[in-house]
Amino acid sequence: MRAFASSADLTDKTQTLEIVGEGVYALTAEGDPNVGAVEADDFLICFEAMATPAAARQWLERLREHTDKPVRYLVLSHYHAVRVLGASAFAADVIVAHENTRFLIEERGLQDWESEYGRMPRLFKDPGSIPGLTRPTLTFTETVRIDLGRGRFLELRHLGRGHTEGDIVAWLPDQRILFAGDLVEAQAALYTGDAFHREWSTTTLDRVAALGAATLIGGRGAVTCDVPAAIGQTRDFLEVMLREVGTVHRRSGTLKEAFEAAHAALAPRYGRWPIFEHCLPFNVSRLWDELDGVERPIIWTAERDRAVWNQLQS
Ligand SMILES: [Zn+2]
Image (cartoon, rainbow, N blue to C red; front, side):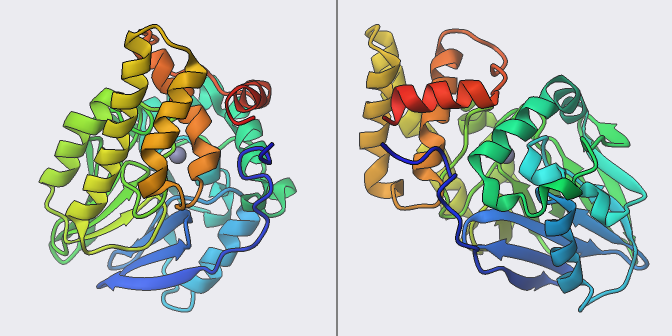
C-alpha cells in the first residue's frame, strides 16, 4: 500500500529565486508551492505566505538580499493552509484575499490545517511557529488595483471559481507577468479536491488565457514563458478527469472504477509529475460529488482524508 498522500516525501526541494521582471521575484522549488513578490516604489507586495512562519522567514531572508522595502500587502491566492499559515512572518500592513477565501477560512480553515499537515508534513517547517488561522484584513469580489508608483499598477483579479471558490491571480499588465496561484500549474499535478471542475476548465481558464501573459508563475512548478502550454496542460488534466470520471458516473459505476479510469488515462502524461499520486484520490472524490450535484466541496478532515485514501489508493 502506498504511503498516505505526501507523508513519505521528506526530502527537501531546492528553492530557486528568479528575478522574472523589473522588481518582480519568484521563488520556485521543484514542485513545492511557489511564492513571489513585487516591488512598488516604496513598499513590497508579497504573494502567498507558505505553510509556516519559519518557512516564510527563509523566503524573506532571500528576498532581503535584493530589497529592504517593507511588506505593505500580503496577497493570498486562496485559503489552503500551505499558502496562508506563514502570514505572520511578513508583518504586512494589509492581508488581501477574496471574500470567499475569508468565508472558507472561517468555515473550514481549522480542518484544512489539520488535513494539509497530515498530507504534506515536510512543508510545515516548525509547525509550532504558526500562531493560529490567518485572517485577511482586506477582501474583495472582482478586482483590486494596487498603485506601484510611476504609473504602474498590480491588479488582483477573481476570474471565476476553479481550484477553490475564492481564487485570485496577481497581474502586472506593464510587464505581462501573471502570478496564477493554483489555477495553473507548470509541470506539476493539479489538486482539485476543493475545485469546481466544469467552471475551472472552461470560463475560468478562458479568462486566465485572455490576459495574454508573457510570463506565468503557477502554483507549483517552474516559471514559464510558454504560457499557452501551461494553461493547456491544466485544462487537459481537468478535461481528462471530467471525461473519465463522467463516463463511469453516467453508467452508474463505482467511485473506485472512476479513480482507476482517471488514473489510467492521466498517468502516461502526468504520472511522474509532483503530487500526482497524492492528489488523485481526493480529486476524483470531489469530481464525483460535483457530478452528483454537490455544489460546494465537502470539508476535508484528517479522518475523511484517510478514509478516501484507503478506499482508492489501497
Ligand atoms: Zn491550493
